[in-house]
Image 1: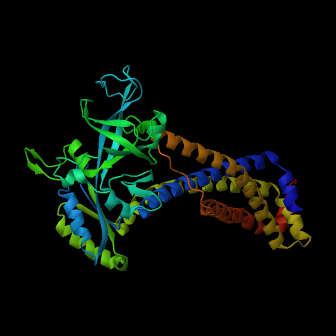
Image 2 (image 1 turned 180 degrees about the vertical axis):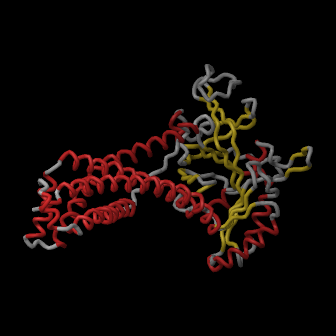
Image 3 (image 1 turned 90 degrees about the horizontal axis):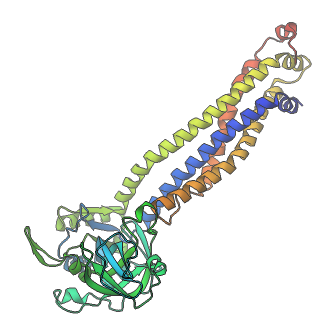
Length: 442
């Protein structure tokens, strides 16, 4: 009775309170979903890592020399290591023939030229197929935080061009980004040219299959990377001058940016991995050796800052909304002091009145939260679409984990109970005779 009458009166105040709760709950829910989504995204890439240990260059330039031989050397330690693979990842340019030919354009703008040619910036990945296959699961492998999925594979499993000391055995096999293939109407057997910095061809490849990554080559990334391409390691080394060449600083031999290491099943406990990592560091001084536990710790540290910020802002907005509701309830209860005094005088229990006051606040909060779900979902979807388009990534930036809405509603209701109890307790401590004597109107 008291609850229903309270809701019917001062409807404008109740509406404002409901809207305040809706806005604050919407912020908490959307910010929490974004924070959880980014955490899940980072952890997905970590747990899908192709190796238990990663030996990598400190910077972007490849610094691991003799990568073929040193990877095989690691693989021969059968007691500790089950597989190892070298990888060279560099940014480069490819030229595509998309119509009747002509000379290669000198421009590197990435737009179609009059001669029917196009130049694209791509991420180039050099691998040894037979080594890489040991790390592939379900036709997928993460490389430098990009999950790469294959449709087709190399015919030559080894790396004959490197085996010949970069003199013969060129396969020219390439797996090209599916988005590039579809966009420019290419197919298996089409020719792709690897270009130098002057946009002139250095070598040619034939498409053997496609690969897909989360990097779509749109948004702000499209000017930097239009997709990915995978070739034999030795051929990429030769084409990018990372094979055996004389430089002012000496000889660069068989350079790679990373070596992925898979630890034997019986040695996957943290203590064993730390011991193996220490041994590998002795073989690769000056390089970064990271294990799953260490990468997880760093990711958790980085994401924790975002989570704390997002949840703090969301929680603060909810507290503001709840305080607004509490203020409205306090004003209304003061106006209804005489009514409460009459109820007390005729024998209505204190707990019953207290329960109805709290229930009225909870009902307003639930109505507000229900209204806030829609803008929270729409806002999260808009943010996800904006981020995907901005960065050109086919990934989810927002989580659909049920923990987020459950935590949000629990946090809201708990604070509503706490802050609505304050004016209720204050009112129930009043002097009944004084309140009736004042003759306040209901």
